[in-house]
Length: 194
Image (cartoon, helix red, strand yellow):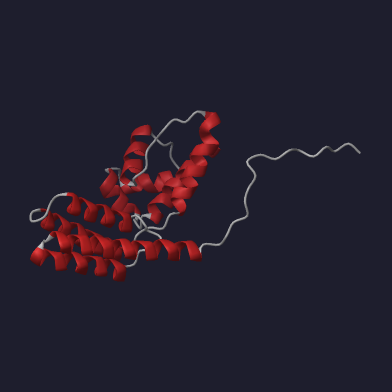
């Protein structure tokens, strides 16, 4: 097999493992036999586009033909996305509960205040690197406190509290990051005349 297919097989395997799936689970999601997935990952079979497409979509990946000149930029972006932390199962359950509570609240409340609350919830859930279930439980508790009254004042108070939690998370994330040395946009080659 060629280097390109070896690299592709390794990336598919890494993506499967990053999702926490075994080959049998991926098989069920992709509709590709588990034995074929095994052969693909071990580079023992030529990869068909149909199998590749099914597996990629099951792993939340897209197949794209990229102009060779743009490849470094695409690789840089995908490296940054790959480094983004994955939300753990407990946090994901809390996020789902928050969505349910907000959807239930939407039947009682509406307008600019409710739109502001929804925006604040989206903002806090986008900080995936520091999000933990305890913070999400606080957010859910705040939303549950609104359910009884659904007044504009309660919605505004909840939005302000969630914004404060979001700011704490954002600042905590910045303080934990290691400062990086600035990188030049370009570098002049030194003359080797000697």
